[in-house]
Length: 165
Image (tube, rainbow, N blue to C red; front, side, top):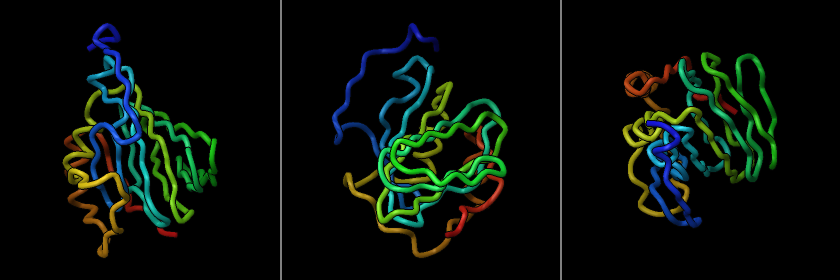
C-alpha cells in the first residue's frame, strides 16, 4: 500500500468505527487502509485513571496530542505532564504509554507509518462501542499476559502494566 492508495475521507464527530478498550473510547479517525498506510489516527476519550499498558513498537512511531484535559505521557524514562495542546513523540523501540489525570480527557494517537495493525489490535483487545460514550472503568485490573499475547500478534510488545496514579 502506498500514498497513491489513499482516499479522500471526511468524518464528523460521531462518525466512524469505535471500540471500548480498558475503560476508554477509541474512535478510528483515519485508518491505515484509508491513508495509503501513511498513518493511522485514533481519538481516545476516558476518565481519570484510564491508562494503557507500557509498550513499544519496533516498526512504527507514536505521537500523542492532548486535545483536552490533563494526561501524563510516559516515554522511556520521561514522565510528561501534558495539557491541552501538548504533543509528545515516541520513536520505534522506545517504551511508552499514557494515563489520564483529569476527570475527562481526549487524546489523539498518531501511528506512523500506518500498517493496520493498531486497528486490528484495538478491535481484538476491545469490543465494539455500543455508544459514543466513555465506558465504565473495569472493576478488575487487565490481564496483562493476555494483552501481551494479543499485542504480539499485531507488532506491539507490552513491557509492563498500566501506570497507577
